[in-house]
Amino acid sequence: MRWWKAVGLAGAAGVVATGVVVVRAERRRRAYTPDEVREQLHERFAQATAAAATAAPPAPEAGGFRARLRRLFRR
Image 1 (cartoon, rainbow, N blue to C red):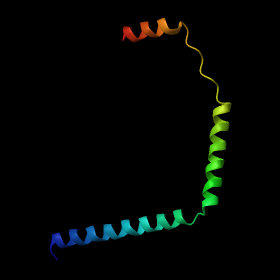
Image 2: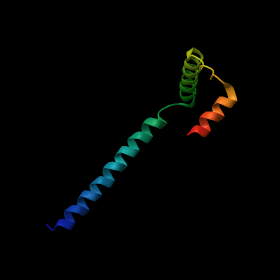
Image 3: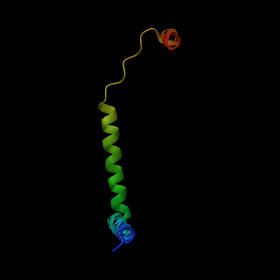
Image 4: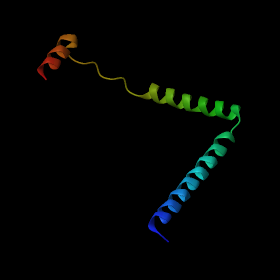
């Protein structure tokens, strides 16, 4: 068997394997009903807002606008 035939067969096998992976992922994605997807999104949103609410607010910068300008031009 010539080397280019082996390379061609390996390429074809790679394309087939990729197709199988894509089809499986699509089947899993479509297995959810719209209500299940909506519930998951609501849960994620609630978790994100709770995490944002518990996070400490950033400390105010000392010096205000002029200090920021000085630091900017110092660089």
